Image 1 (cartoon, rainbow, N blue to C red):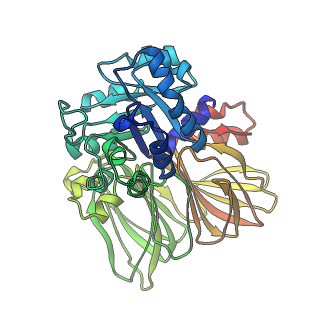
Image 2 (spheres, rainbow, N blue to C red):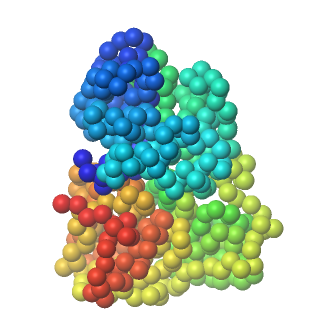
Image 3 (cartoon, helix red, strand yellow):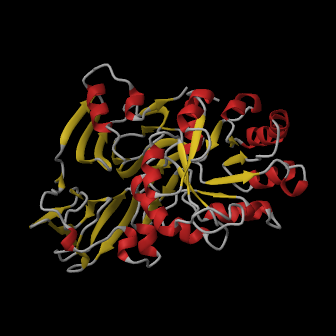
Length: 466
């Protein structure tokens, strides 16, 4: 497995199991099969008591089970033994070998995970590792002396960390829901699966509380289209004269709207603008914004939040500050709205395709494509750091995601999380929205491709696959 394949598997991982060599003194094979069958994505072998040769021998059933189920196998605190154990990477704690030393020992193609238990450690750790273990969240007998950061530590990680991370410490079936609501994209567990009467069922129930790691396909009429760490895609309709949201601000995420039918009136900063269908309005961080339907017919719109910090907390009736929503007093006079009207936007052209740039912010971009039947789309590729979203306005697209063919007609959305290989093309004439969250320089990339310039796709998180 090469580095791109490992990191793609990491990017779509949500459930991480940590085990000793012989859980409850038994051979781990049956437990591993049950856990992996229930949806575990990563297994870590953590056993501090074994000699080198004993650890290598103990690793064999872990390696074999992970290979059979397509999961990642990680070794705890022994980067020097990763090669001998056939592991996909190593996890080190703050008191173990440094991440830099671990990287030097395991090489560029294997992954390095690092523990972080404070806000200060989060920023430093993100620069050094492929993923983070964040916690302890709650007290746990597995590490009784660990300081706990609670849900607030998870909210800090949600708002600052942009690599994969897993909440750890006191995660079980009773707490996983609130941990996911606080923003954790994944969790790491020991007892919740190891000690369960039915480990496969326990893994399945834990996995069900976490964000999806596969493409999300939703059809016409559905309102909650995707809730991912990178982006939330929602659809709503408001009646004539109704208010969608009173003026408010967000500190860490952008709030973007695309009007599908009718018209909306926005307050953006000190201005008020009325926009028809086909318009895009984006509120960056700290911009005061709100909206209503000023017309005499219903208005239908898409609403994107990037990163995805809003919907889970809002739907769970958390306090607004927990889902990054504040009053107008938090607004900045320097923040400016982005977007444009129907048919407007910078034009990126190539044969059989016109792309209008509707909005560009660091958190996401929105492009509106017009394509002909001869449009060749995009060949198989994967993104490691951003989600790729499609919403068909007219015509039809054909996508291959998760090794399945999806025919997407008007009103259908396909949201592809990081780590999921995908490709697409048009079926006849089509018009669709394409959203990349975070932006990752995609508009610049597309412009260079159209201009015939030499470009390195990986620089823009575009990893081409055979």
